[in-house]
Image (cartoon, rainbow, N blue to C red; front, side, top):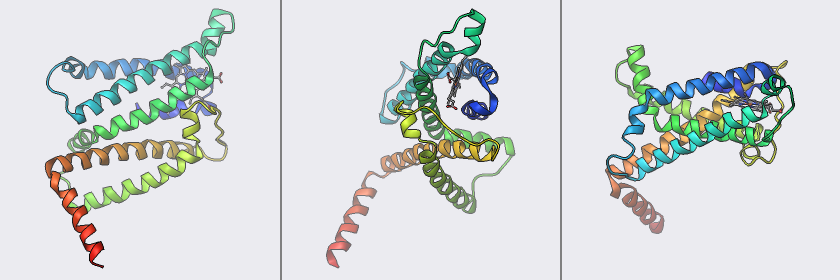
Length: 228
Ligand code: HEM
């Protein structure tokens, strides 16, 4: 699913027809994904809402809104539907479609980061790996840091902020030069926001487990600073 979403960003590479057909295919995949997680929707009105649950539900609601806007604005801009209908219509601007696409990308990355533990556990099961070792944890952290740095660089290169604010929707990439570079940039953007969400969640959980630790750590740091 992630691979297809990234392919959707390579509009000049795929061309319009493939873009629109894959986009409609994505609608089916979204519905399947929703269907597979139907239990989550059914338990929405049950149980208590703490900060974390509120954050997760808000991200999912925003992601759903971005996905709906993305598909709707795509259909209303569609060249394929225009030619089938026999007249030109561009009911919604390209800026709106692009902004929805970038909001969708970032929210999907945050969604992924918030569920990263489940993704890792399933990957471990699939690969038959044992529990994580110290070395593997260190390698994973170093890899995350490298992805985050690449993601910051790529966010500026691709003008993510101007796309999110619908300030500027055009993008240029020389696909004759490199195709892999394009996908690496978008993958690192997804990696950056997934890492931010994952580590924010880790920090939140560890703070909840030992609420005094951060405060005492800060106080001893201030104390040590004063003594100098
Ligand atoms: C996951 C779904 C989708 C994503 C992530 C996505 C993303 C994008 C992006 C980023 C662009 C701008 C390309 C560029 O500047 O190089 C674009 C353009 C476009 N998209 Fe999509 N899109 C999706 C689904 C759709 C669907 C379902 C349709 C229509 C059926 C559609 C129709 C179009 C059209 C017509 C353009 C070009 C607009 C123009 O230049 O007039 N897209 N899309």
